[in-house]
Image (tube, rainbow, N blue to C red):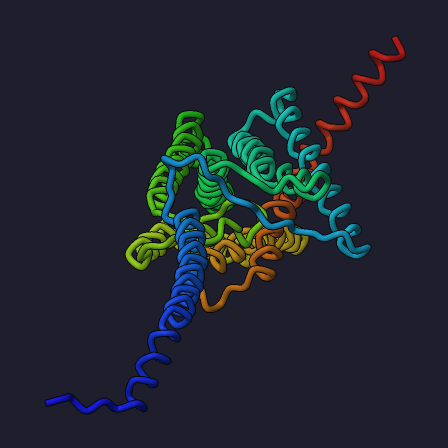
Length: 368
């Protein structure tokens, strides 16, 4: 029996066989395009992965540093502000250095109050020099980068000198309290040994505070941007770059703020409250007005120093912005170190008298 042959089916099979190579070639091209596309995506993903790896966590063991933010730009207004900050810094350095040398050179100023004032001026010289020179270099030469170790050192000395000054201002308020409220016991309560203990305790307290906060801050892993939204390395600005949970450390930071800031503020307020009561009981109107003017000047400087620090270290992050933080930092890094020698010392008759005496002696030696 002869099988039935379907001519149409044979024609369809022949056509299909003839089209298969073209289909295979098309599929081959398509698969090649797919591989190329996947390869491109793979290389893109690889580059992204490498980029992410470059932004991965890093800490003190790496050679990576930070990039600080310039405080001023190149506009005319900012150029004027930069010039004013540099001028204030130079005046602050000159005023505080003059106070240290004057108190050291004149025997009449070898008293507890002036000894503490010389220590305050000494702290102010280095406190401003920790941050302002770097800010000046960043503006003039655009050198905004800072190494991890350099950032840690700047943060340590800033915290060390700032906390020491906070404690010293509180001890100076106690000195004024004893001088006005207990003048007869002043030589005993403010002996040379007591003054040395005051200075050493303020330095040790500042060193302990800086050691704790610097070590805890630098142990966090940092990732993402290395741009610090501040013109120097400060704890709140660095915590914004940490890629770990910092809530527990923020509680520690708050506690240290209470010890270093709020306790001295309470001590100063209490001391000046007793001073105010004693001053109001004075019979001499002139002496009362003089004491009130002196106390008000001292409290103004204290508020300008402690107020910005409380804002920076004790208020929640929601109250902060980079621009406001920069302006606030200028107060306690530049302005207060200038006002301290003016308010505490240069308005003092004994200090101005000693200065005139030394200037007169220098003039006599020059003429001779």
